Length: 64
Image (cartoon, rainbow, N blue to C red):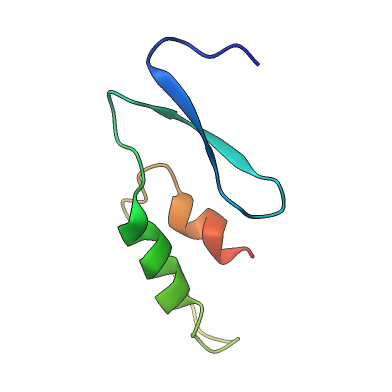
């Protein structure tokens, strides 16, 4: 895949998923990874809403 000059590919370490991120815009960091790890302790019947999700990385990581 050809990337633009301002893009990078980040490996999510999740079933081979990778995310293309714009270096000049919002890029997820360790805080999103830690938040998704904390959120996975929820019970099966709890409702989750991901507001202002940026690039959706927390929701993507929660699918694991």
